[in-house]
Amino acid sequence: MTTIAKTPDRVDAILRACRLMLRMNRARPDARKSEILYYEMLINYCSQLATARQDGKFIAAHTVFFPSEILYAMDIVPMHTETISWMTALFLGQYADLLAAGAEQGLSSEICSPHRGLAGALSIRALPRPDVVLWSNMVCDNTAKCGELLMKITGSPGFFLDRPFQQSEEEMAYFIEELQGMIRFLEDRSGRKMNWDKLSETVRRMDEQIELFREINRLREAIPSPFRPQGFLELVTVDYLFTGRPEATEYLQTLRDELAAAVAERRGAVPKERYRMMTLFMPPMYLIGFLDRLSREYGAVSVTEPFFCNWGEGRLDPARALESVARKSYMLPEARLFGPLSDNTVADIVESAKRYNVDGAIYYADVGCRHTCATIKLFKDALSEIDVPLLTIDCDVVDPTVTSEGEVREKLERFFELLDDRK
Image 1 (cartoon, helix red, strand yellow):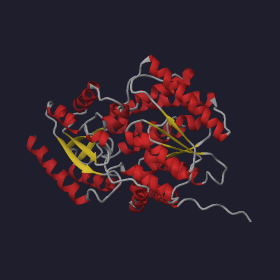
Image 2 (cartoon, one colour; image 1 turned 90 degrees about the vertical axis):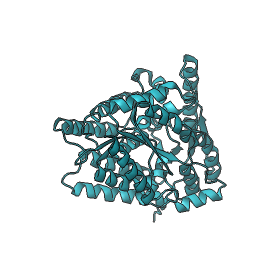
Image 3 (cartoon, one colour; image 1 turned 30 degrees about the vertical axis):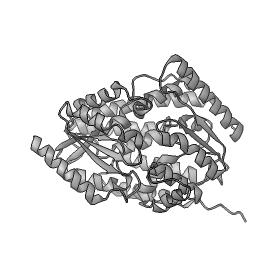
Image 4 (cartoon, one colour; image 1 turned 90 degrees about the horizontal axis):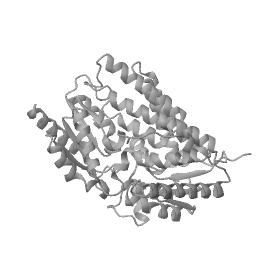
């Protein structure tokens, strides 16, 4: 008799939730095809992670903004640590036990809650034990330090990927050497060799996908906006989990075509668009459904998210695959926050507000994120100069004890009243 190891419960539970969402979407006559593809992708991602052990696969836990395209090219199963944390809060609404377990590891409430919860989840075996831990200094100090703790908790070996702040010729050469060292580490630990042809094909698809992101951004400039109020979270997840994957290309092409059709028909995402909003940073995962309903109720649509959807300039070259992987890390929307904040970052926010005809901005100030909260006044002052008000909502991306639905509703309703008075 063959005994199959039980899949860790959080992955099982997320998988069940995604399957339920997929069934519900398929049953809706007005469901977007891209949304169905989105849930199919999540199901495949979680299924692969859930069965990796019994299938003899090699699992690499990696932090946000890590070049997972290298893992795919080596047939290594990726486990995106922060996104798994977010999906636990988004789909399950269960996070308190993970934070409590993280506290037992010595992590205080001032530390980023996804990292606290992740440490807790691995310590109580609510997630698969990875074969290796991969982490980097992108984009914050929490991320740069979390890998060492995860190695200690899991007993797994790890590799720290050091990416320089700037993009000079010397720094690019250094980062490429870092990537080469990581590949050697993975080859030694996994017994798998880098498939350079597969990496080149992945880079080709990544370049195509970045162009699709840019096309989607241009379509979102339309008035009324064709994309649903909190739809950017799909784009973020696709970028984080499926970079260079063929299913991501299909999703982005399908979404692009859906938005183009809506723009041609002057069909907005909400019945009556009243407020065009800029979203700065990640809203609370446990309130996404509520925020979507409230947005529809008031006709408020997030039309631009500079730190999630605005890719930097440039193209990727499949013939220079590893260099392109390095270059892509500097093109990421979030790369603007890595290292000293430049004037270009502030200018990009102002330009986005003008380009998308923004009425107001919402700054979701995650209390555990020192990196982003330090920029609040700087961004608020810059937007004020072009007469765009900014609302700051203190919150936590996964911990529901910080901010309640009622508190967020009250703040947003008052902000919408302010916007009405300005019209």
